[in-house]
Image: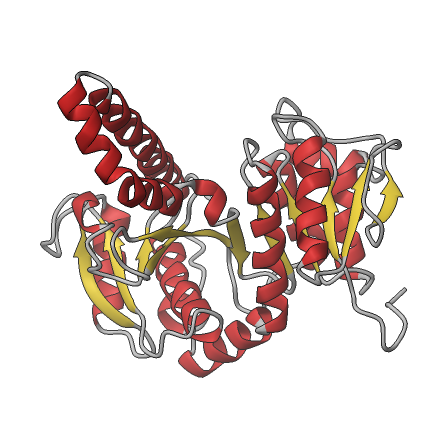
Amino acid sequence: MAAAPGTRVPVALDGHGTDAGPEPIVEGARIAVADGIAVRVYGPAGLDLPDGVEHVVCERWISNEEEPVAAVRSVDQASIVRAAQAVAEGEASAVVSAGSTGATMTAALFALRRLHGVHRPGLAAQVPIPGTERRVLILDVGANVEVRPQHLIQFAFLGSAFSQAVLGIESPRVGLLSVGEEQKKGQPEVVEAHQVLSSSDGVRFVGNVEGRDILADRADVIVTDGFTGNVTLKTLEGTARAVAGGVRDAARSNPLAALGGLLLRPALGGLRRQLDPNQTGGGILLGLRGVAVVAHGSSSAEGIANAIRLADRAVRERAVEGTAELLEVSGAGRGALRERHT
């Protein structure tokens, strides 16, 4: 049942799954509502939700230990399943979850389905480039551990289309993550994807990029498989924490260092906040007929709020419609991108 005319369709927020329990969910919803975003929480009874936040009681949830496909199919009353289905039925505008990544992606795929011509949705995350206002979009960061060349090719088109439609980048530079800049470097699927993208219309391909190039503003979109992308993303997050901790410890080592640390504190604090994964809110599944955001399980209240903001922005900017239109114009899903059954 669709929402009544004139009412604002809420973002469906999974009320289960965060590492810290329900508090980040409750406080994140509170922050988002204060921003004017309508939120509906699918979660356990007894949540101390603020006025204006709808609550659908769902005691069942899918843990990280459960096999996602089997669980989504067998537990139709699980919070993430009901939240995703609400989007499919028009009762919610988007779905956000910090629970099981596998369950979130599976529930979203089953309920929302793929855009025409899309073989596999890709999970995309924005990574801030320190010292600038720019961000690089990396995909896939966890949805597809193993990929074929045509999947990498389509990720390039999905990322480029999303960057144009939502992020406002007129002609996004697309790079392929590999172990060297040369065309023949990398796994066979990377080499083949490079060959096709080099001669493809509709995407501004800048060639291979290496790990050291991710934060060097070499590309607006970086394409890789889900295993490499997930490891890359978590390595960047861990490095940011380690550097911040190292600087803090060094500043406490002696009085002179403490003075220098005091002078650098504003700049270092800004850098730490910029690299904090809570600032991005999580990843967005590209290639679906609806908006689904996968937040970090360790998200703080601000992280949950930013995930809701990301979902709301994607809806308002017509991310799905814009991506579909640009994919159709570019011809993605046809020709070189057609699934090969060999």
